Length: 229
Image (cartoon, one colour):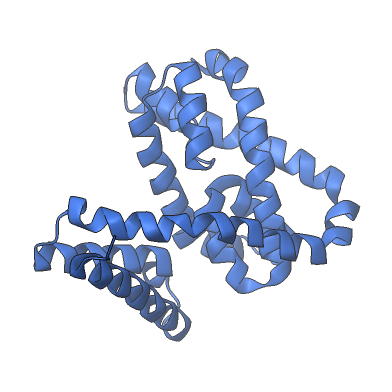
């Protein structure tokens, strides 16, 4: 099936804006110039201004989303190159991921309780720090709304990518391993895409943490969430 003009325009627009956002992020480093955030905002603005609906943009989105598979597999390259470092720090890293996973779950649930939100919202927010497919399935188990969970995941990843590296620097966390571990545990794939710009080790650790955090959340959340309620 031939690609429509709108689809081709959408693909070129998305790639072009993202590449421009990466250049701006280097020249003007700021949470607001984080490529994922800046490009998302710019693309929405252009699509709304040009009258292209989400339905018309969907074919382009699906083509680009297909590339997430190879991109995720490509994370194995820095993992392999840094395998000895990962193995040497496996025990403290595992303990850190457990602490980080429990903290992200508890903070999400307590915040929803502080704002007197529903139990369904709390369950949906509890999975915010893992990748979307895992979050949706775990949310169903504990009584959350899958669609709402997907939104929380996106917001958590976006804010993690925007403010995570800056907060780590402000807290004087300079160790590459620790920075990667923090981002992968709390901001999943979007955070990993951001922290990999700092170095191969950060990206490798973040990618590994993202995967293990998803497993830990799947195991921990079904019994931990009722305790928080």
